[in-house]
Length: 427
View: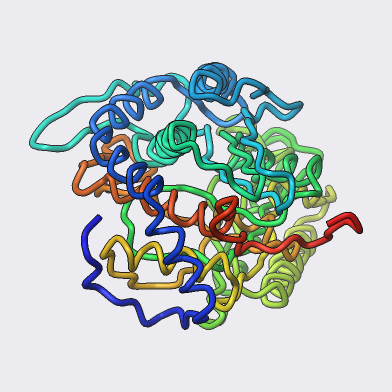
């Protein structure tokens, strides 16, 4: 490991946590594991490529999950399994005297099944849809498991590893929601998602997504002229919503992303629908925005019905996505451990970020959670031109491993920094 030259100033570090982290970092088994992660990074990238080339659209992650299950088992998590939601999960047991830490990366991509995910290499970059988001995170988890299994380190905490479904789009975080529903014993969470290691995500941007569905009698464009139109009502609603004003802080946004409806060019539309995405870092502002958007649609329907003589348009609000807001304070040992791992690896920590990731779920439950990138460089996420470059990419798994071991503790050397939320009397 290099001697740290880049200090971080964003996260105030508790001296006792720094002392515990230094004990972990200097353990000879940890030093050896970090060296192996660097040496094996080319093989880790080959694994990343294999994962990328298995398509995994939302709700169609089965093939990739089955492959990932095999990889978990082959690296030592013999009892790994697929849960009822489709998550691939394996647990590395600790001494039995500590908390439970969950580490995950998401299996799904934003791309439909027909998109070619074959990886192409040119000019020092690997190009393929999904190669960074989140095949990189999935590969990092496997590298970390392998390093732990070969290290002969027994942790105080149980460490649960998961390739989870449903992070993207209409997946609505269903995989992580299911894990926390089924495993109330989890005390802390790390999501590994994306590539560039410039920040620790400590906040969760909440979102509410709806389909606004307009319906009416419909009819012939000439013979039934005078009926109210579902498409016209939808247009009025979109125009009203477009005029809404939202605060820049806390950042609050909206967009009507898709529209559909009508039967033909010569029909008065009997149905129409648009999908709207509303986001905010504040649950109160998000609730206000949702109420304003619904009021705008109801006013638009009333206006359309008042314009014409016959036919009643109605609107239905169908929830299609609900991502809660949350925050892990910088004083949390989870954040401090990650900041110390950045510092140990000489990585400049540039930001404590807020975004929408799998960490939203535990944050909303009051469980300390962060999202870390997997290392390397990349761009074009969610586009066919997505790319990954292995520039110092070994720092990703090294940083994740150091963060995990600080939080999980090393039996006989350091106590877990992660606290049990509900310790039993026997503890």
